[in-house]
Image (cartoon, rainbow, N blue to C red; front, side, top):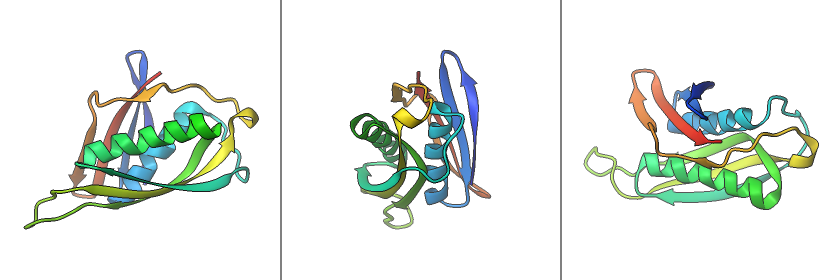
Length: 143
């Protein structure tokens, strides 16, 4: 699993790859944290759990990242060390129905780090696609 921050006109984008949906979702979330903070402490913060459901993979990725931004704002923490367990429904070999995610993150108090603000996740240029090596994701954030 890996991610890279990409410049995007007045915004920031995260491009990520992973061997599985779980890995690519976690990598995008870790990329989002890196876009907010250059230096992430190793041991600070407690883990918190949450669940998200949506009608498609792209909608689930959007809602997952939006939930992390919400948790950041409500808890006053930077969500890092993100873990995601994605369940994609299948019907006759096609992915249809509700997608779900059980996630967790380690929340580092915003007062203990120098963090930049990301306003929101966007659907602009969003990509979630299966590749020969696993999964690819591209997400643009409004700054």
